[in-house]
Image 1: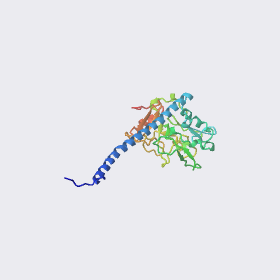
Image 2: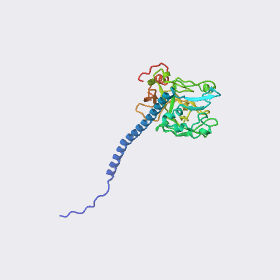
Image 3: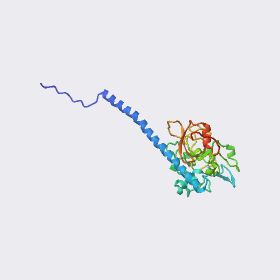
Image 4: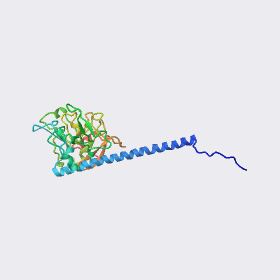
Length: 300
């Protein structure tokens, strides 16, 4: 017997559509966090590689000059002056060891950072100083007396000034060197033999995300005379543990998402890079920031 023709169904029912959408949603929920984690892992590896390059550059600089570069230079009429200029920092002094000799030839070290002759070099975006998870733009506008509207290059890495901070009033005095108990401070010339705590127990450089919204971006160029909070743009202190809010902008932090909590990457004197979380005790972190305090640093 013949059977009646039935119209062939070519579409999807509402139930089938809902099931497909649900499956896609589940897959999206599973894959997106994994993609984000892989991207963050790549950014962390990039940041660590930057610090390793800085570490190698500093070691080679010491081999050449038998000292680490100055935290920054500041002289007025032949006398030390932390905020007088020319201000060039430790990072620009190590540029030859970072395969940036061409940049060094552009710098007029005898002139202030903000002089017209140094306008081009002070805004150069140098990749080794920039973390991909940083929160600062390649350049930022300077605020301060007679400096508004001028730009300077960013950095996400600052030198270790020491376990404690500095007095802003003392920083403005001519004839006084602004000394820290770390490896990078005003007109410093720290030798490895000066690091009595041991290279493996002493921080050289640490990470800072640099928040433009709070006017806390850092720079590789140096201490700019007349800039608000100028010294803290180049060096950091152990006044607060990494990843915690530092009101003067002198601390260390990062834009990395870590399972161990907030914190920042650091390069130590022995060349290793390590992520130090905000769970570290304040006393141990201050000990890591000093070069010859004689403190014990368990676990480091």
